[in-house]
Length: 229
Image 1 (cartoon, rainbow, N blue to C red):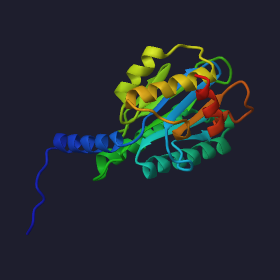
Image 2: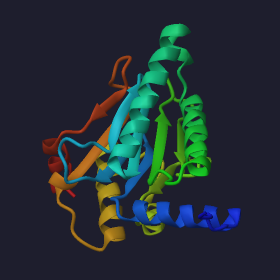
Image 3: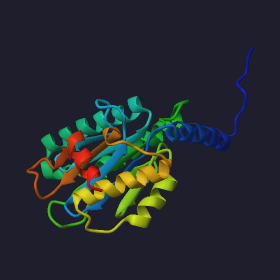
Image 4: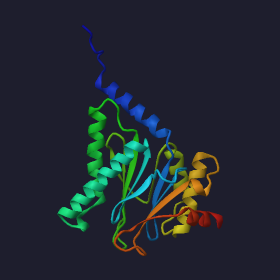
């Protein structure tokens, strides 16, 4: 008769945490922050089709780092939840806070009950309808959720990226300045040149967009902004 070796719960959680951290560290970073007209998310992403930054609902965007299949599964689940809530109640009842809580519960359950945790970190952002308070929620692989203010960085070089952004960040940046400073921060954190074609960016624009606030910046627009830096 074979017996499973006993592993103390604290050691098991530590091993799962280290496993998830290693997986996330292999991914490219994402930075998100408030700019004059809403929220901006910028990432290094060589793929033109496997997006790290996407729309979830009218005023809500999603960004993920780590294992693509896992954070894409979370994004799709978030879209379904948002659609269901919007259909059942009203579009104004779909809030980033509720989605962040749902993601937190799902990731916490996966982390504590499954053998392999998700190797992901995600951001959920909601732009205010007017000049009110924007919301950015950062959810970790173990379900820990934090309400970020101003800016946030996630991914393999999050500490270096946070330092680079905090040294440069100023409230009220216009879009072009925000994109340039975000790319400069990514380059500084990675300590290498990152070309415009490897940059993915999306905004939640409260001023120039109608009901659906999300817009993905095209490669030509990003290249034009960076060329004037």
